[in-house]
Length: 69
Image (tube, rainbow, N blue to C red; front, top):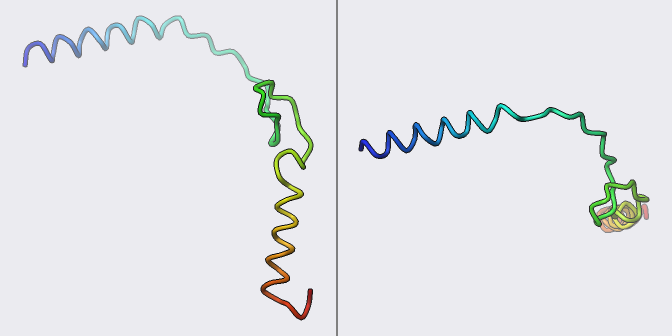
C-alpha cells in the first residue's frame, strides 16, 4: 500500500513539473472539409461526399414518395 501511495505521489509531481512548460499557442481554424493528407487545406465539397449525400437523399426521397419523384 505504501508503494502505491509513493508511486502516485511521484507520478503526480512529475506531471506537475512537466505541465509548467506548456505553451498555449493559438490554432488557426480548420475548415469543415479538408484533404486527408494532413495538410488541413480546404477541399471541395465533392471530396467530403456532399455530392454523394445529395444523391442519396434524393434517392431516399424518391423511394419514400414514388409518385412525387
